[in-house]
Image 1: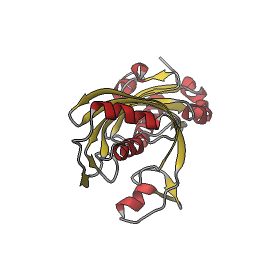
Image 2 (image 1 turned 135 degrees about the vertical axis):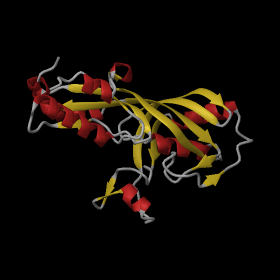
Image 3 (image 1 turned 135 degrees about the horizontal axis):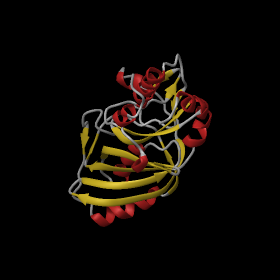
Image 4 (image 1 turned 120 degrees about the horizontal axis):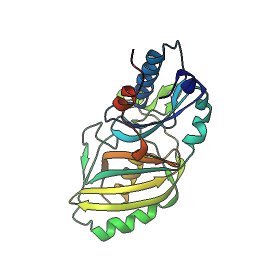
Length: 231
């Protein structure tokens, strides 16, 4: 069992983020539980890459002196698996908001779907979703979106090394993506729908890898807390 000194010296914690939790909620919960378990006044805890509340999977947390390595971990290649739905879009590009538009899908074949993924391999430009935690003029983009305010979002260049179709079931498509730091899978899905001359939104997402870290080695928030010393 790790000691207070171990956490202060620095640990890398692999957590499988639960659905509906923000990444900051996970950080705050674990910081609180570590402080309580070891009667610490303060300890640094941070995460190496945000996951949306509707995404699950690997969250890399650093404690103590290991927080200095957060930028290094954030810059590593990431892998995701997810499900997209063809024929409809939402303002947030996922299920955080309601469907706002529907599109024809009868022209879309399995072959067209698989061929279209090739357009997104390599260095591509994408616009982050307006419903995101990115900051502009000191405010989060989602604050502008929820207030109904228009905001200009800068295009960013990202790299997609893999975009694989795993399963097609009606309008639901399971996929895997391997990508660079800063890639928004929601934006990729929205752009993919446009490229198919239709629409698409993300219905499920799980981060499975960051660099050499794998979600198969991660533990739940509950399991982590259970393994801390109790009073």
